[in-house]
Length: 74
Image (tube, rainbow, N blue to C red; front, side):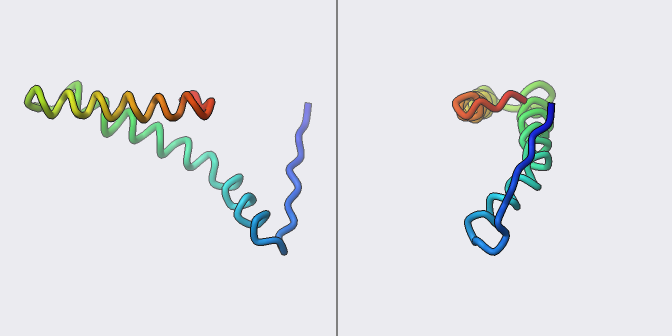
């Protein structure tokens, strides 16, 4: 199975869509790093007070919910 994306690079909207398509892997990896390296490690290993830990958990959950709403499964 194959898929081909076609962009008219003279069209500013298509040029932006092309850039987004090219950067999709980097965006995926960056979001994964943010959720795992920033949030998970600080929640699991950081010496945080109760309120700080709860805030990080809440923000991480909201980010994951947004990703789920966009059908992005990291």
